[in-house]
Image (cartoon, rainbow, N blue to C red; front, side, top):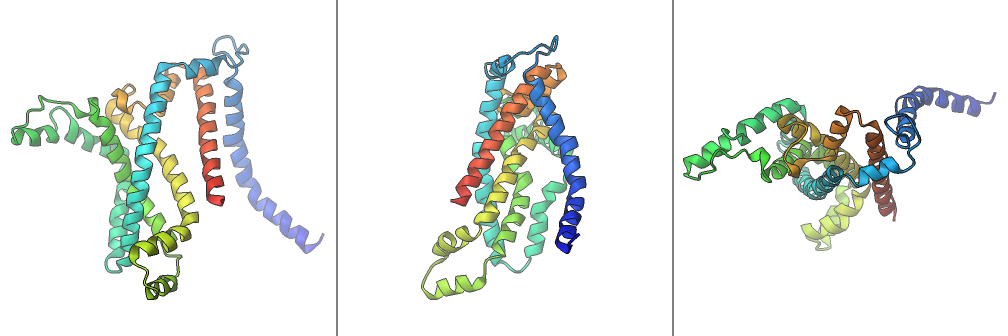
Length: 282
């Protein structure tokens, strides 16, 4: 056996355990989910596209899709813009940079249950927000903020606060790969900071941006934990997300609808990722 062949065999042997884990714990279970999406929950008869029709015509599913889409469209631009701006400022600031990075990463170390407790202290009908407003003679009449339209804003703030530091560090990693000589040459030619940012910074962090956008998009689905812990399975309709309806279908053992909904969600996420990948490659 040649040396090249031996190296290829060694490479496959290293990859095999991880690949086997992906197949056993991800691909095979997902294949079973796809199979179940075409089977009736009662009787195990073939349902065709019936389960998918039930899902797309379900009013709760439509509400969850709308809220999830609105949440992503609001949060992603805010998070990406804020984190890139802060990262650009920190990249120029040498003194105390590590302290700031640690401070921004601190929210990641805080458990979701602790965040929920803070929400309850602030936004409960007897919480601090109402107490502060009452101090300034603003009567909110014991308003429970998490059961109003304000709950969506709280959820958006929580997501950005939780993920801002992580994105800042990722942006800084991308920015650190840009040679300072390029900026110095541009400054000699009379380019200002804004032009340097548009024509030098953005093109050179294109690859890093793809990874950060995908990670931020996937992290937006994890905000369900906070919403569920603070408001339960049926929160205010403004924060009723996709994860809520999947959790409720799981509780009621609606395996057929849950499987069909999961396949639809997987298709949407896959199309979104492929679209971004195609856009980045152009």
